[in-house]
Length: 268
Image (cartoon, rainbow, N blue to C red):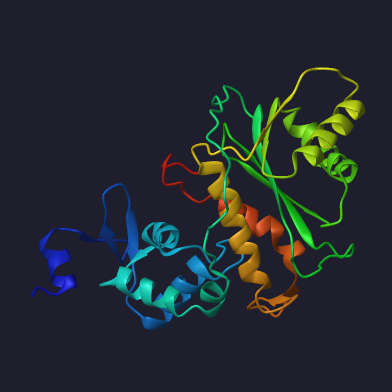
């Protein structure tokens, strides 16, 4: 069998620029890596860093492919992720049940229709000892916002959180898709609209089985948070700085928002 290096050479996929060896790919070119130390660093950076989020093999492949190439890199990446304790320990089986099929018309404008859910059971973090995270996904742009909160928050608390962090930059949604208790969601709407001072109509979709992309984004974020909380309250980075899940939220939000979605093939 032809060696990968020789095959790449014969296929005219290797070329030099300023003394650096590159591998030609379909849409771009990536720096070819030779030294083992560099390979280990790339695998760590593309999978382990907070802003990469310990994502799945397919997601991590996209990161590595845009960064570097070496023979049999996909096999090596698969083995690296398989032996990642944090990924394996927190990798969840997705068994959330949905209600009857509901058709949700796709929005024509940003932040017109959102998915909203809470991740609970997190080890308390931050000065306020937050133990949950409110995750909001815009169905138009597939952009995500993650807000630390408390599991015990009332509908009014959630409305205030939404008011302070979403309304000023994104506006007021017309439809909220949530799997929370319908009574809670209704009270959330009522409190939010009282703050705004409007009597406009609104709509809540409970347990919809829609196209699933926004729901999967929320599930992905939940998985990432649980991976970083898997070994306790704190996470120490390579520089020796200690973080809890609250300080990591901007990084993991970036990881989700810049990751290519399989259905759209676009970054958010």
